[in-house]
Length: 100
Image (cartoon, rainbow, N blue to C red; front, side):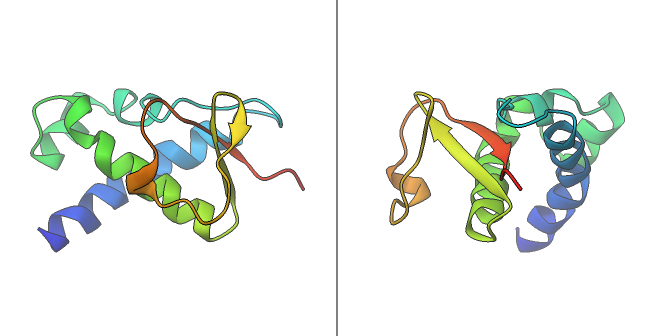
């Protein structure tokens, strides 16, 4: 499974990066935009049947970017405070690049 996750990262990250780069601060993306942007062949390559199957991994990738200081995760329009783990975040989130 670890190899599959690395491969999913290789497929998902270009879409996440492109989407985040296409929005000027303070505009955000919905995490679901990344897997929905996959081509049919990319989706097949992940071994999943729908884009929804990739949502946990997209959230994890965005959370890692948050920990690296490149992305801000928002919930109800407010940044998720430091010290909150991904597992503790329930409901919809949005993401944006950190304002330089």
